[in-house]
Image (cartoon, rainbow, N blue to C red; front, side):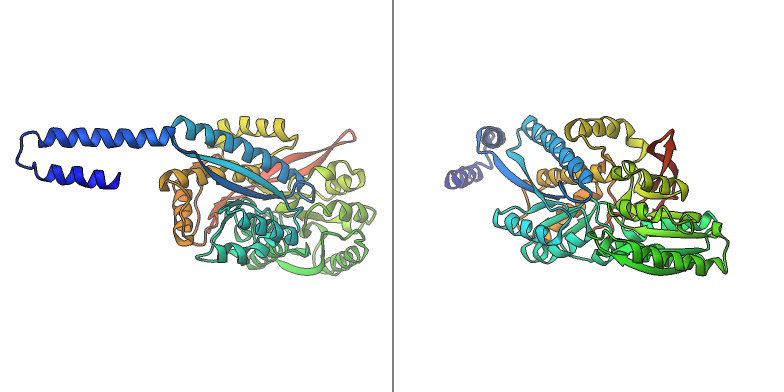
Amino acid sequence: MQYEISYLFYFCSTMKNSKHFLLLIIFLFTLFTSCDKNEEVNGEVHTIKVAALLSETGALSYLGKSSKAALEIAIAEINQDFSAKNSPYRFELKVYDTQLNPTIAVQAMQSIAADGCKLVVGPQTSAELSAIKPMADSLGILVASPSSTASSLSLPNDMVFRYAPGDQIVGQAMANSIKSEGKNALVMISRSDVGSRGLNASIANHFASLGGDTSFVAVFDGTTTDFSSVITNVRNQIINYQATYPNDQIGVLSTSFDETVLLFQQASSDSILSSVNWYGGVGFYKNQNLLSNTAASQFAVNTHFYSPGFSLPMATQNTWTPLLANIFAKSGENGDALTLCAYDIVKVMAKMVTQNFGVPEFAAALRTSFMNASNSYFGVTGPIQLNTNGDRSNGTFDYWGVENNNGVYNWYFVGQSQRISR
């Protein structure tokens, strides 16, 4: 075929002075563009593998399940669009349940690499992302997390992208809000993973820059069930602060996940701990397990607890409202902005594939192509504006607390942060 094309163009070149030359060129252009289209419609379909690292059975399983549903919906839409446009590409999704365990995430990445997959959505936590990052970088596998926030992973020229605002953005928003409520002292505790510690440190640093007093008193892991030592440390530090500040100027911050339910349950009988306001991180946003624990929920009510979640833009409400309804119908879980970040990620992957006629082969081209596709995309979560390190560069956060309605506990909207850009 290549020889025939070369011959025809050589033949054309000999006719440059012929009055039929232009007509022949038009005929050849029509012939070959028609062949290209027929090859695209009738040729082989190219399957592009997309892997997802999600927690379906461990902590934050609500986010894992809702994100899986969001990805399935997105990929069905993408493949339908590919088909309608006679594109030869089709996405194929494979979900790996990591249970938020970095070791399991690494094992999954080994399987993903062996399968020849170059596109990964997830994982959900910074601890998992930190564990798989060396493999992603060395093998040129693009990894886009919908919810990792640790600033320690914000590095240039790597294969890692994050669609959730990072801990510096969340930390500044939370510190501003807590300080604006009149708090001057903050007792800090945290889960031991890199994301929770990073957010805790960011809030502390921004709060201190506003003139606030901070004290980090305890750390625990995701398997902790006895919080007695943590409670003692928090209690003692509150008492220390009470020598300087009234109770309404003292707060407690816990950046943690599902284990917060047990922490609250065990803290609920302590009058000192209940006498000040408590705050959470993004890992406990609208946690559904809390609502089924009466003692823990009432502690949240008594301490006016709230935690931040990435806010969805009103400009896209007509899109995300029915989409979240479909996600709930499919998964039985309430999705949120982080769920829809997963949806946006795979949509941008499809855009990149269309623009590049497939997945770019080399790591540098893959990284650049995904960055460019992201920064020119307006998704259901709004404009995807990534900084030079591949992280979302701005965010607004909704604050949700717990209320008691005649013995029934529910999350309710408390307020919203300022928009932060970095």
